[in-house]
Amino acid sequence: MKHSSTIPMTHSGTDQKSSKLKKFHKHLFLEFKKGQMGYATIAIIGQSCLGSAAAMVLLISEMAMIPKMVLLFFVTIFCMAFNGAVLAQLKPLTTFNILILSVAFSTLVILFQII
Image (tube, rainbow, N blue to C red; front, side):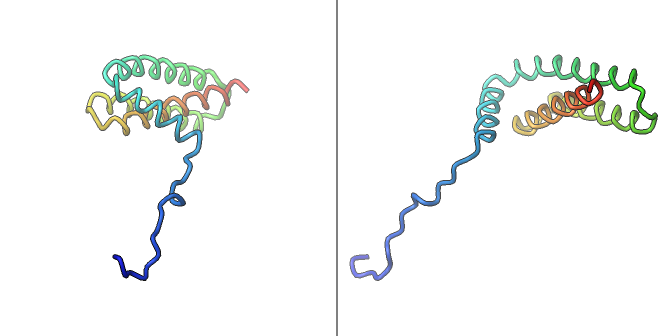
């Protein structure tokens, strides 16, 4: 390499700054992974209660029947998907992402029905 004509390359320009949301997700995931059994147990209770509240709000709303049942179907599927992921002992990242999806969808359903 003493007589090489190539220019030495530094890797300082390749570091991409991750967004604050990605950092937050990573921080929460690492915490979830560290205490997965305890957090999964608490999350099952919390997201199931949130999902049942979303189902209740949907059922008492004055929305048309077909959209109401479609939303109710998705609320139920997302809640069951997380419960199934915990029971099947899927990878922690998959379980955590399904939890986020379930909680976000149920929360959005509740917020859009209240507004």
